[in-house]
Amino acid sequence: DCGVWAGIPSIGLSTTSMESGLTAATWVIGTGINHTFAESIGVENLLVGHVPGWLIRNGTVQISSNYSDPTPAPRTALGVTADGSRLIMLVVDGCEHCPRFMGGAQGLTVHELAVEMQKLGAAFAINLDGGGSSTLFTRKGVVNYPVSFDYAPIFHE
Image (cartoon, rainbow, N blue to C red; front, side, top):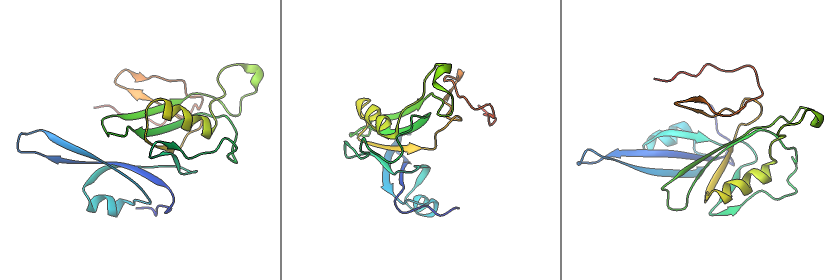
């Protein structure tokens, strides 16, 4: 268990089984949630964000347009709607190190990522580690265009 910086936001999911056989789920959204605390409140799945912190908190974009890293790049974000009924995942393709003359997407700035998550309906959103390895995998396989060629193996059961 690695330490979690107190200012980094996290989104987790806590589930409980009901008498009917269905499962009830509750989003756990907070800052500085570590593995030990998450387990103590019943969170089985926890995603810890990446700098700069919250993209969106309580429906408001938290990253100004003049944020200190204005570089468009591949990005990955995770968010939850205000009523908790939807999880929003966004993977943005791009290549921050590719010359513009090569064409193709450059990606988004962190501020642009926050704005896109807000447009998609996120009331809370975090920035996950992005870059050329940002990959979206579904049952159909990889559905975006990562620019990193050092794929980690993805196993699907």
